[in-house]
Length: 141
Image (cartoon, rainbow, N blue to C red; front, side, top):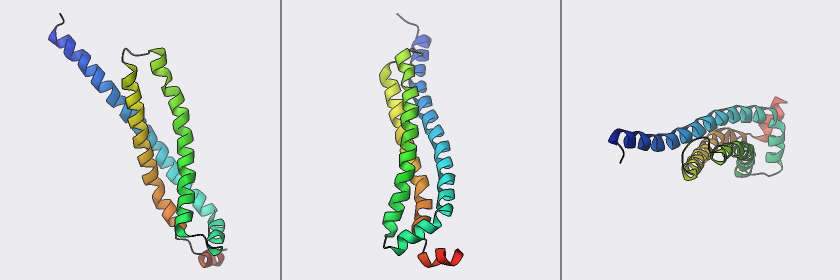
């Protein structure tokens, strides 16, 4: 028979740790998303000529937006896979006394939040890239 305070302490640990892991993954993903946001802005400003040429050859706004969004999602996915490789080591090495399911759910929720944040952050620069007109690019160069 366990004392109520011990049972409560154990229950608090098993509930707070997955939430902390989820927020840690999401926070890290948000910081990476902001970095990708800045990199995407820089990429678009350097590749205005290419974007203008694609528009002049008949590419639609949606195609250009999809191109830049897919580039950003691919970079983010590579980072997520690399991060998951290291995150999976924690339950395999049994660093903490928790079930593996808790880690799995925390990683799943954290990465789902990361994906939503990355998509949200890359939409605006992608829309700006899609709005570039070929005549504007030729005028600037």
